[in-house]
Length: 329
Image (cartoon, one colour):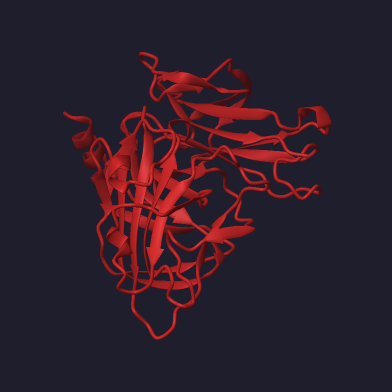
């Protein structure tokens, strides 16, 4: 049976709450800036129509057959947005950056995961808010991912200012920029062919059906930065309750990543060092705290992580996605 059929069959049998998370770039809901184009709107109505594309690097995505079920965002400025239409399309790509031509970024086989329809979302400044997809995208385990967001906010005499947040302190200059175009009510910019601007991407999380994942969080320390020397980060492994897990780190990702016969997922670490392991709890989760040395010589170090889930009954191994961070002062 084709991967798509298997995945959709599984999706119909497994309760929707059994999903795991990837975070791009991390879980923190601390925000210092934002952008209203993807999901928000300005009080004057600017951005009431917009089109935005986001690029998720391949190393941050799970293995072959992983089923994408939704996106989560948080806000720099919160409030309720009534969308006349919110359409999200997912597509695989080998690109490492986005062009201003929306069509040229949607290669492969795009999947409309959220068809344009009226939707109300109350965006929070303190918590992730989920937008579930009505159609599922099945990941090939190799490609990067483009998310195309086409938005029309309901016409109104006045708009509530809402801006989707970014969560990187200091700003992650290595992240692929999002590209976007926006306009006022009736501008038609939700179906524009080309972007006119780019910016560092908003922060978001993705939800995946019944596949092991890894994500991390580090809030601002005494220096005013996340991932600061003398501080810490927490790595969250998610999978099946009672399964074993192992967690490894490295100073870089493999290029290209490697699929290992007999092991699910894709091996991504260049020179992996195993540093933690144990059992996933009754919720299928484990949290591992990694302390960063209080040593100025490690500022700027790049660290990457990946976990493995092991079925204690069969010994079957599935590798998670990767996640990363820089060490800051």
